[in-house]
Image (cartoon, rainbow over all chains, first blue to last red; front, side):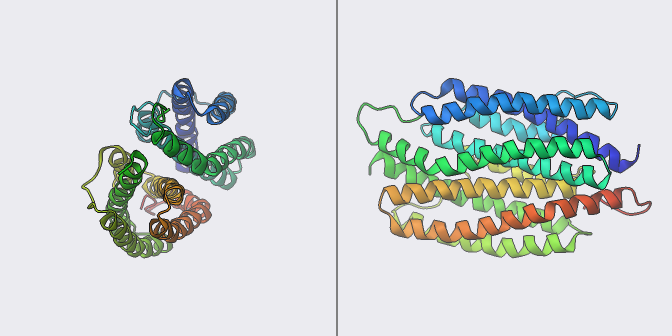
Length: 169
Length: 169
């Protein structure tokens, strides 16, 4: 296996670890949200998508003769920040959580754009197709979060200034 | 000051700390890059933009009667991941660094979109205008990194498979 092919495989395993982390983060977020039902519903939809993405990545990794690793160092550390924010208990948790979700989506988008370029360069059409399919879902989730971030912010600030209302989650 | 106004001020101070972190990360990246001159030049341009953004944010924070804080907890931790990656010494440093830069830009984009919605909700037109101006620069940098990520990936993989060539930075 060439160095380039080893990088492709490494990045696929990074992506798989990232999606495991995504699953944990999204589940933690969805379980805590109380007052923002639209956001909760969209996160629950994305949990289902994430499970499908894990399976697609496992297929690519197995086909290349390897197996998914446990959380890898580099991306695992990056991913851990997402989870840390997902579960945090700040007074503006819902806003920071939405921001963290948006940032995490863009980590995923960067990963799949890299994987698509690498698979294309190395002539691996199946990996390319799998990553292009996943990228569509990640970009849709990122767009949804971007479009709804102003609403979440406004709702949060209104609730923050309403006596007796809980704003944070 | 209402709770909502306190959140706006908190987020402005978070953004200022984030831009300090951005400055450190970008400087560390630019100093290490050897074989990817176009990327290095764009990062150097963005360092100048980042300094201007810090000044704009300081203006908003001072006008609201506060002063920029040292690195704050929440965003500081998130920002630290960017720096950790920026300075890391992985065999695919240039690719991971580009991805990290792209992710960091989107953390900034999420922050300014939140700030714009908050400033608008609270009638603070000056903060809104400052953040809209910064957002334009962040989105341009994010777009540039997204557009160039496939090229960086391809160049990296070619160099990785070229005997005697250094690929990683």
